[in-house]
Length: 111
Image (cartoon, rainbow, N blue to C red; front, top):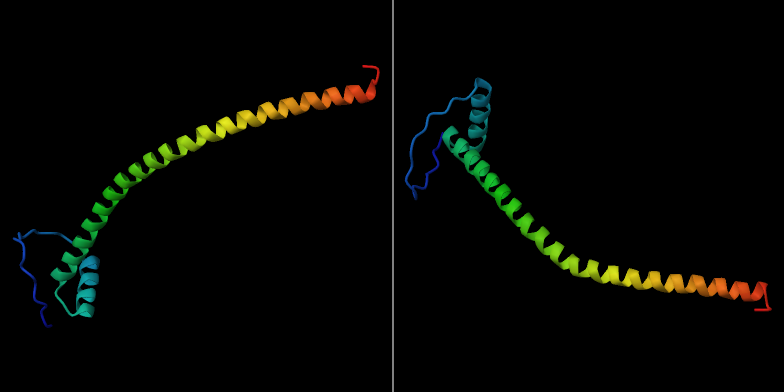
């Protein structure tokens, strides 16, 4: 099997890892399919796993910031909407009492 040249840009260390027979068979199949060594496949999986973990930590941090900013922006709008609803409530109450007065004038014209 031809060997891919490994970039030796950073210092490396060796670790011993135990895999089940099934896992090793799958790794070998994938290595044969990719035409590379099993160690290359394992390094690729480790790199992908580490990048996913880093992504999850970053996304949690960013989610917190986004929520904080949305809450701040919506807080201003919520206060504005609450003031508008208060004004609408006052107008609705005024309208109700005016309707009651008008109905009493129509029903009892002597007033």
